[in-house]
Length: 627
Figure (cartoon, rainbow, N blue to C red):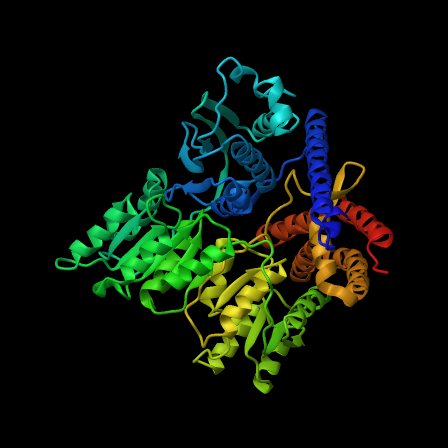
């Protein structure tokens, strides 16, 4: 309610008061969530999942979501994920996110200047277990030596003034310690007062698959200049590029970098420049402008890495002549994809990748879109978003229908769900491309499966891009704007923003007793996007819940695994649209057990589903219908 009030045209004094109310409410929520989590752990009621997930992607998304807080304090938030460490692991992604959010949040809170780095690597112990080390290192105030042994105890902070100055309960680190122990690991601390702290989490995680990085890039031997006045960031970037076998030179001073570029003109010119944006001697925009004035380098590909989340900074860099802008922190795959398209098409328009803007204006688009999607609630959500963007939408309920509509219609773009009856999205795409070898209509995959293997499968059948469900309207708009304004450009593989994040300890949730039922921010975002169609969407969702309770036992009785998996997959994405994350996670677990192990739901799991359906329907009845 305070957020609604803040956007209602208040005067300065009223806005100041509502800001105080909002911050106080947020602090209270943190305290309540901490106490609930701690109580659940103490009572032995906290259960852990063991499911495959992309650890590097999770770390990247957490850093992205917290980068705005860091940027507001003028701090750099860096991710240093060892390229030799596996990325797809087996464990509890939600609890690992909770650990990192807590530790990175503390680092931002207690650091006034400098940087925060998240360093991840792994090694095998004597028993052959893969032990992952996740270290959060800051340049903050540090912790006095006599306090350190007690820091992981309940309700403990560095001193009595810390709570008053920085807020918090003193439970965060105690919860982290308990979570680590529950997962079979531990947490340790190294800190020097006045110099900073290093919190390191060590966890045994299973390896789901070893997927090599996309190193099939024609960059071997290319001469690249790295420019960054932060030695730590320069070192991370250097190590990320090493697998590509490029000819790498680095420079910590942009003025010296200019001299190096000028001297190389008469010998062996550089072929690529990668620079930081915020540097003390000269920022990345000024450096880019000066590079462009050197005749030999007026069209050299220039990639800028920026920790700034301000749109005006991005515009400034584009005007200076930067070819691409990536927001820090980045992963190897994001960097490699950007370099690949940049070096193959260096005169392309500037593209801003992986930058999250919380209040970015959604521009109106135009075009005729084919949406291939078999779940009614997903159809309604996507159609509302697309029509708000100014697009005309036709719907296909399965892959075969999509193929028929494509043959008879004139579409600028196809949004293709991957798992549909009769023909799935992969099969429909293959048939379209068999009839249209020129691939004249961009096909964007929509799927609730977001592991690297799922992306690779989409690209291997010829799809042009990938958007994981549930997605935000801004992410959809960015991707459509990119593809609709170009004729078959190079894929840019936009990373998901908040759409694939699991709920974290700090999320604003409606609760029933102590069970997290709905993530309110996701629910309200959907309500706003649907407008007058929201009540119709709720009716369709409730109908689909009732149908699932009938269809699942029937598919189990008929031993129809294919229908069973499709049913839980559809409900997984439909419920995630609303923010019913626990229900979505249960369907995800059932889907994985069905598709990978050939297992149907047990009676206990079906009872759990039915119980959650009852709670969801009751909550929707009491809270959801718009007046």
